Image (cartoon, rainbow, N blue to C red; front, side, top):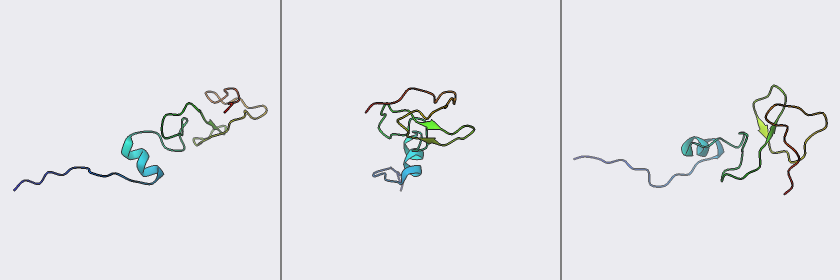
Length: 71
């Protein structure tokens, strides 16, 4: 008898789903799950990104200092 294991139905919470699909999580620079074009911003010397649409005053973090996002 040979048992063939298969993955039939996959559900998970936020961090688990990111690991399951190979995408970045909700804390990544592109935090949306379905490839939306909204980049996030992070605090200076931080590693967690936040979905901020408006650029804060005197904000100059490399890679996160894009203009305001109009939705």
